[in-house]
Amino acid sequence: MNHSDLSVARHAPPRRLVHPGLASAARIQSMQCAVGQHFRLMLQPGLSLFDALVLPLAGAGVHSASLILLGGYMAGVDYCFAGPDTTGKSLAAYGQPLSAGRAYLISGSAMFGKDADGQPLVHCHAALRTEAGDIRGGHLLPRSCQVGPQPICALVTALDGFELRVAFDAETNLPLLQPRTRKLS
Image (tube, rainbow, N blue to C red):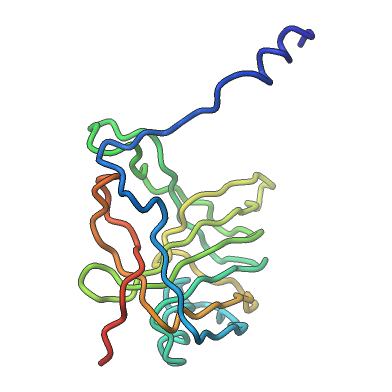
């Protein structure tokens, strides 16, 4: 690369993604609560990633949470990643599921909330190292990923004052987890 190439790169306009729908006046939807919990959760070997997260969180009375997944071995990982939506209905769409097989979970983040029908939902992204040493990553499919032979630590921030629930987002034209006032049962 010569000096003139660097000049162009430094002054190139930033990329901007434009979603198909109308942008909300509030760019970021947020809620706050006066109370919250922070704790460690050990994901149990042999369980699906979904069950390893949902069962103990529900048992602890957690309705919604943000999680950081620390490193550990997975007995099986299925994942996908988003590419351009060929239908034009939205900016991106998930591709076909891919299998990483047994892999080391380098790190990940997850959101625990409810789907549109009120059922538990885990949305998780992670970086992985396959048995062949390749680095992969994307959106994990929690019901078909399996925790490996040792527990994996997750750092949990419970969102006690509100819930995350899937609802249609007019800007992205996609169903997204959004903060909502939690209905007390």
